Amino acid sequence: MSVATSLPPPSDSGTAPPPMADTWCLDRVSRSLEGLSAKLPCTAALLKFDGLPDVWALPVLLARKPIGLLSRSAARANLQEMVGTAMDPRPLILPHDMPLETVSRMVAERYPRALTYGVITTDPATGHYSGFVPGIDLLRGTLEQFESTLSFLRAAQGDLVQAEKFASLGQLVAGIAHEINTPLGIGLTAATHLTERARGFQGLVDGGGLKRSDLSSFLQTVAEGAEIITANLGRAAELVHSFKQVAADQTSAVRRSFSVGQLIEDLISSLSPRLRKAAQKVQFTCIRDAEMDSFPGPLGQVITNLILNALTHAYDETRRDGMVEIAVESKGGNVIIGIKDDGCGIPPSHLPRIFDPFFTTKRGKGGTGLGLHLVYNIVTQTLGGRIGCTSAVDVGTAFTLILPLTAPDRAQTDRPKDASAEFEALGSDAGRDVGEGDD
Image 1 (cartoon, rainbow, N blue to C red):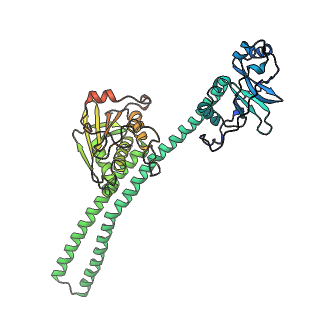
Image 2 (spheres, rainbow, N blue to C red; image 1 turned 180 degrees about the vertical axis):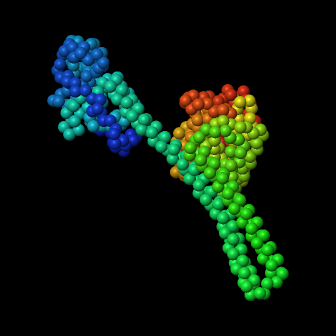
């Protein structure tokens, strides 16, 4: 009789990831099946198999320790022989407290036969047999484990996407606050200067030494100061108005009618602090404006992300200067928005994955891999539209959005749609001449 040697427990330094706190262990799917004696006749073993129709193999024990497996087919083929001569000499024997995710990885990489015959579990302290996991139960348990982990990851992904939205809004707030400081500071300086001149003028009046030239100089100072204050307060009010509308849209996602061209102009104005620091320019062309009945906040989030994505990914130290072009055109019942850059482009191997969650080439450099995933979800679900991307290395990247002028109800936009056929039908000019760009 051949005796199998127990396999050593896998090292913690292997390829298996560290188990989560709620990870299932092998004993969660283990059965307390009575093991077969090494001297049990095959006819007796077949009777045990008849009572377990879903089990393809059973453990064989010697002094309470597993030494092998007897398969159903081997037992039938050796009716006149003892169990031991029909044993599989290399069963998979594992501690019962081993995480299921580790077991599933081991089985997939080294012991795929365990999905057929099963896994023997032992007590780590004594090495004694503790249970048996049929292959089908191992597979079911592993799938349930993955489903549980997937649910957790989906919830975490939703939280990260929400955080990505507010991170963009936070950058907008910081930029606008810095931008507003400039006109308010100039206005405060002009008002302070006018106060000082007014005190000096009052002194001349009280002292009786006022001359016509003093009056003319004072009036000129007042006029210039008032003009400076008016212009800068007007600029500050314009920034506040743009920011209020953009911030309200992005935080509330309220449906309303709006002009696409005006929305993009407000967005560019709100992003002006960030754009002024960039070596690249942003050019907006409204070929044919359109009035949309949709969600301006989510649309603004999409356009903002695509602009900042281009500035972040399309240009590097070897290619600093450039132009990001935005074009809007209405065709039929759709509005077509093209956003393209003349940057480094996206490698063909990356292009199919740019909308995947957590895919980024800037890992460890501030990239989360959620920007374009968020864009795709908003366009296809909230706005009920399509988004496409083309790119050529060292030529540039172009994103094309095709959005209905009237957004569908959200309940009708749960399922993403393939945009390729519609892009061909519409033949959009926006971004058609450039390859796709940035991840």
